[in-house]
Image 1 (tube, rainbow, N blue to C red):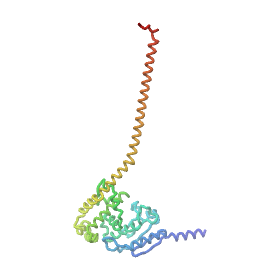
Image 2: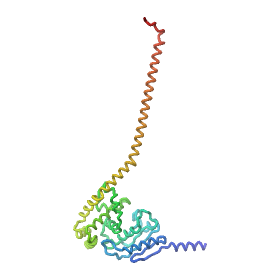
Image 3: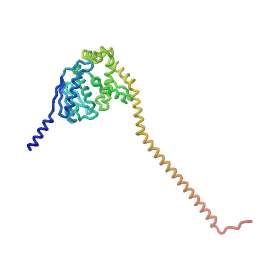
Image 4: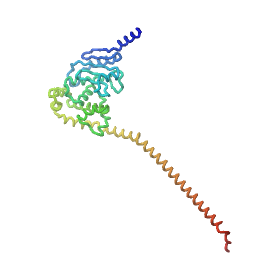
Length: 318
């Protein structure tokens, strides 16, 4: 009994959470996540600056969850089911999945960079950024180039056209598929915005945004463009750049739908038509045989009446 208790005590100590401090970052994790947590902190310290923003100063707590159950417990019920990591700007905290995360969770280094960008943006601008800009900037800062591929494959562009920024905000809460599309389009919007000033990028815009307090006035001051004007320009550029690709994807999907769904139905119908036609031909042949048999029987009945009906036949005349 003492040996069992001793083994449990050793296991409890081995499974106790650990902590590492690097620069302004602190990571808490279980022993199985030590290598991942150390690697993540090394990256965070090495690249602790974000496009257009001054270097962040707030301390950040990174909690690496050992499994999905504890990840859900730590992020709370309000977090989306499909999230691989969540940033909490008000408490300067990030919770992310550890080694047990599925392949859909993405590259953990890219994911952490994305969440750190959220914290850096909120440290400088507070709650000023709308959701679409917040997510688009985080993807831009994390160099998530694959977002362009997602825009190219976005069939909604071919069907419904490019959404407004307000519609983009709504799509983040409409399920995993809709949210991934919104991430890609928001990323493209921030890339286009940064491209308006090739010298200063987003830095002058951020300075004006913080000073003016509204995105529209900041955009007028930094780029000489209204928010509505930029939105229209982004919609047009996105449709022009990706609409044809999305339409081609739509045509391809339509072709696959025809091959997979419609063509088997066509073959089944052809088979039914052949069976029906064979049955009709067989019925016609049976009817013809019956008609011929009936005619022969009628002739036979007629011959009987002629030869044997009213007595012996008369002598032939000469």
